[in-house]
Image (tube, one colour):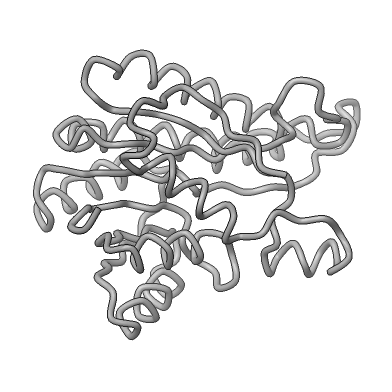
Length: 234
């Protein structure tokens, strides 16, 4: 699918899953637009892709800030045209909340902000471009948000990711007639630099490359009839 324009949020720190997703999409011919809150980090990821000969653009944006996201969508349209082929809502984060009785409101609100608010604002801002391209959206849920998952001490994260999955289902139904597809991946722990540091090398992980392959499939023509689905990765 050469010539596609794909926007990927949450491509910042080295060794994280966003880096691998961006590399795969770029290597397969997409012009990738990378978005992160840190200008230095997203600039470094884009520079590495350009050094490898790939087309990429970097944008610094606080995706939880409505005005910044609106401005980002306007800038992308001005620089690349009104069409977008894929949006990968990868921005987010994890932390333990502890037992409900001992939890802090700040922790709950932070996890909601970085996981749900970012996905909602990016989706809303880029839907016109995705409609023009009859594009695909991929959301990042978590196994913790699936029925039956153990959620003690991670309930705030699981609830936030559950809201992301609900957002995905709403978009899939609402946008079906526009040609926009929406799906999600729900991985267990991914082998990232941050997880290796906190959980060690002996833990069971999903490989970053496998996550990237799943995201690629959901954005590809091979999944043109797939919408409203959650792909569990373990």
